[in-house]
Amino acid sequence: MMNKKVHLDWREERDSYSQNSKTALKSHPLKPKYLKHLLLEDNKFKHLNTSIEITLELLEKVELRQHYLLWLKDRELYNYNQEIRRVNELWAIWLKEQGKLLFEEFYCKTNTEEEKSELEKYHQSKNDTILAKFKSFKEEIDKLHKSNRLMTNPHLLVLKAWEYENIYHERE
Image 1: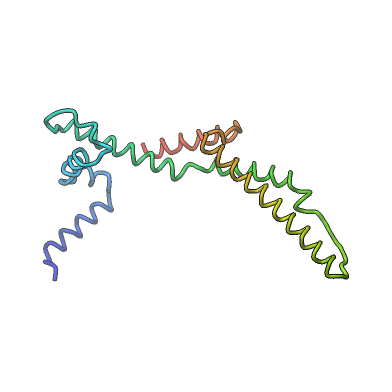
Image 2: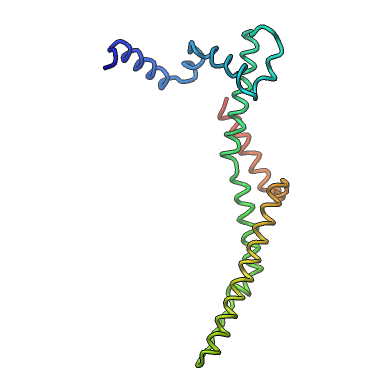
């Protein structure tokens, strides 16, 4: 059974974090130890340790670097809306180009097994053609995304900039 005093202290600490997490983290007694650990152990922060002595200023740099790395992760997670819109545009253009093949009306009365097998071969080749064209479309989209040439629509670029601006102002 947990000591009642420790349990109450833990609850009070938890409540203080939930009420105001920013000030609670700034005043947390373990924060310098955590930053020192990052500085000494994490490869992303070791390059900051240029002095023999670990000063408060150095720990502030580590904290700033940690915030920056978190910001990069957030930016990656939440700001792909315009890229998705661009892929939707390209997908619509691709569908329009494939329309004749996709929506071809082909009605045929078959009486013999030979005619049925020919019709099945035709539909299978049509499906294979559509699948091959889709694979090449997907590869093209992946190539554009990896080479950072996906976003060419100026309207979507402006919207993306506004989203970045919004993220920046929400953090202040």
